[in-house]
Structures are given as structure tokens and as C-alpha cells.
Image (cartoon, rainbow, N blue to C red; front, top):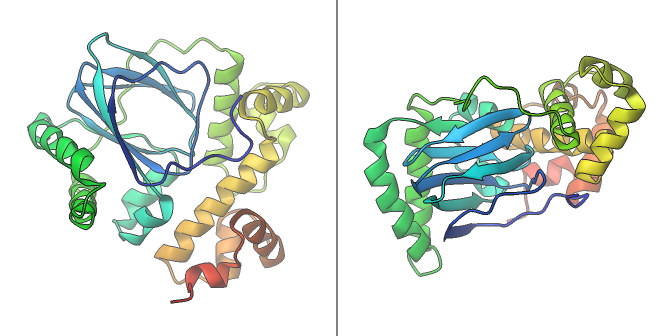
Length: 270
């Protein structure tokens, strides 16, 4: 079981051999993965996705993901970027929206691999030095180029993933993510997944450590964060677009999860 509140790793870089995960995992940061050698396979929500050697992958860690397998020679670099920092870079709105709505984006163009491998080593070394501001500008620039480069969601095969309890919970999470802006009930979500509501709630709670309603509320708040930073929409418009239905419920949930009002978040004190 993962913690009720997803963690954040902040701006962190690792170079290591990845460990296969026994359960789904989530965190609030944007994550970059780059297999330097070998390849790796994720269960991302309810989809099996392979990341080939040298292909940079980007996804939002709040979407449940689980490393299922890796080749024996897999050596990879991973970078986590705080969501607020990522949003402050003002990357193309359509690309950012696609990422935060649950896409795992892979840059499959092999011509980028040598440069990405070189940059990964440099950023891993320099992020904790006086060159950190330079690294952040370079990472931001790389993501801008990524946003304008054809990307792909690459399933490793057409074989369905075995329907374990974890995979069932991840399927429910995908429904919540895809339909977060609509009025949702547990009964309707369970029916879409072909499950009894009682089993759906139990399965989800055992896997993620929180209720489906709590997960949905957390997700809606993070989508509101994106809109507060990237648009001039009013609080009512944001509340309606993210599924809260009213400014009062939006304000209450936002304050509970962030400790700030939407107005204070949008215009932080200098």
C-alpha cells in the first residue's frame, strides 16, 4: 500500500539500476526517465508501456505507475521536477495538458539519444553545484524541444495485463483521471469498470491507501493548480472545468490540500 498523501521528491536526480516495484507508486512531481542501456517496462495506470534504450520519457508521477520489469543490463537516469517549478516554465499548454491528463510521453527519435545521454550525466553531476541555475535552463529548453517533437505512447504488446487487484485499482484511477471534470459517483465509476461498487471501493483503498473520492479530489486540485498558473480563468470557471461544481467546494478542497486560497496561489506574496 502507498501512503494516503502522495510524496514529493523535489528536484532530484538519480543514476542507478531501477528496482522492480511490487505495487503501484505515485508522487506529485514530473518525472523524466532515460534508459542509458537496456530497457524498462511500466504499468502506467492500466497500460503496459515499454521505454527503449536512449528514449527519453516524461510523465506526471501523480498518475499511478509501477515498474514491472527491466532488462538485466538496464542502467537509467531519472529526474523529478516539482510540479510548481514545471508549471512556472510555461511550456506549451496543449503538451502540458496532455501530460497532466495522464499521458506517458516518449521521444522515440534515436537522433536525440546521444545528446540526452550526455545531458543526463551533466545534469546529474551539476544540479547540486553552483551550476544548478544553468541546469534548470537546459532542462527547461530540452522539454520545450520535447514538446515540439513527435512523441509516442508505446505499448509493449497487445497482451492484456493480468487483472490483479492492483491493476484493477489502476484501471479505476484511469477512469477518475479521464472523467475528473464530470459529475462522478462511485457507482458510475464502478459500473464503467464492470465492478460492484463495494469491491471497487475496497480494491482502490487497499491499493492506494485512500478512497476513490479522496483521490479524485486530489487530482482535481492539481488540475486547478495548472489552470491557475497557465490561464486567466476565474475561480468559478476553474471550479466548473475541474469538476468541483461550485466555488465554495473548490475553495474548501483547495485550501485543505494546499494550505492556500486559489487567489493566494495565483498571486503569491513577493
